Image (cartoon, rainbow, N blue to C red; front, side):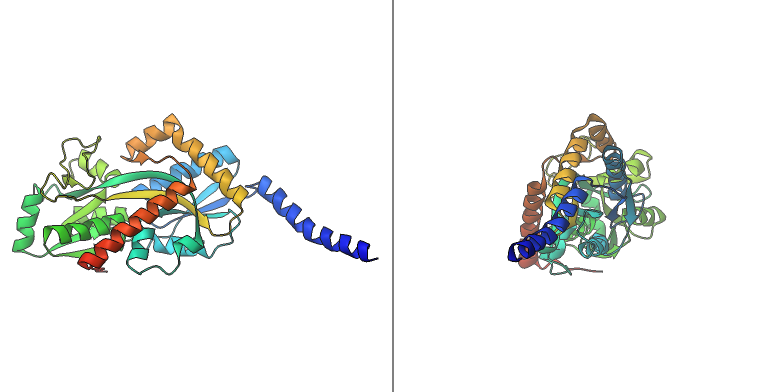
Length: 321
């Protein structure tokens, strides 16, 4: 009888484990939601929709984008952190995750509450003004900022657009008022309408406006010039020595998502990123593909955290909301 009871208990434990393994092997067996923390139409949204479409094609289930704009992408991440860790709720994260942590703004611990899946791409920021502006260079902008108070827009607090502006203010020794929007697209429209003076837009979002003659680019935030905008000088070339920021994009899941699900997603995302049509599409978005798995995401977010933590400690970066 004791042996029979022991066997029954073991079977009761093993049955759910077997079911879990079967469900993981069949993943995905239902639509998968990918949260995006920015408004539709911006660079992050376009990137997410491309990967969602390709993941759906490869894995046989729809990957559905849910735009949850606000707080520089933090709302989408916070929603995902509290979702069931079963692989059916994912999020496109950015370097803003590390920035939030460095500034003490996070309502979660990214190392504890999130699981990285794979890096996707990165993009530099470009300082742009309206083509109607009389500002034609970084030097012009600095002179204008000393004559009157300027405003700069962003896709939200702690986004790459925001923090590039904060770094610019600190290194240039000027003041500008930060005006956050619910994504890059609304900030771009605000610049066009004259509501704000400048934005440190991601190259992906600004490119079409530059090509149409609506935005005038002044400088690139990366250490080297952009292959897509070769005539635009870097911030360093414009007089701000050591200036460098880029925005990176990652696919993440809630902590405790089954390892087999994570591994499958990591593998498929890697395949997609290496495909020629992906490289071509990212080039159209003025983004650069990022290869590697979950460890690369962890390394990149850790490096970004240290960078901004040191800046906050040394210069007291302001969060003007």
